[in-house]
Length: 293
Picture: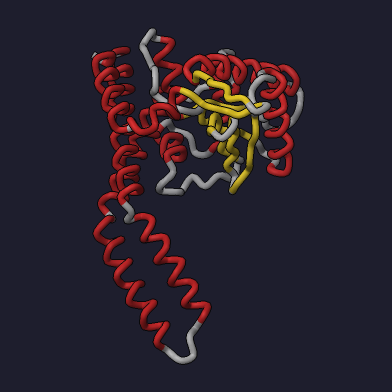
């Protein structure tokens, strides 16, 4: 049953993402004046193997140190893709990049650890044009201009009360009070795959929260429209006052810019497509989990 559901999901996903199929199937990079074509589906397996081996080395080298071992865990669509591949299910175009969680209890060491990971990538795949940037706790590693790995950094002080966090929701549903409990649980496993990949149960609850959050955004569409009208009128009022309050005007313009973006057809379509993907993934995982019972 879950196979037929997945195939339906896959076709729906391709229809929703038709304009991005080339981005998903192939990453183009310029190196030495020439253009190189890379098949992500082939690269995925090599990157997964690299991450598994990287974690093995970290565990072997850091076993006797105090504090957290700085590990990477594959999550989201890339984790689901791996679990489906293990069951012999075709996962072509299920995802276009790899999402990683990075665990650390020393935020000052994060960039150092990320750079070490990045350099190891360069060493292992020397023919690829790697580059990266770090912005607000999110690390994006690219090949040429195409995103290939996104790394979210989590520390023991992660806010478990964030009502929009898919990660926090999944942890709570699995019975963990904080990220340290989750980290301690996965690192007591002797199975490197259990350490390196989020479980299907985790992804079920994560996608469940994703559905709730995205649906909430879509339901807020009328209130966004009302807010945009209000602040547009507010801008007019500020601009007609003498003297003009430049600070207030700048703040209102910033708010208007945000609502304008949220109300754009592209933004709304992206939310709807994301909601559809979360729903399909949730259905697939639910079917797999039920088949175990």
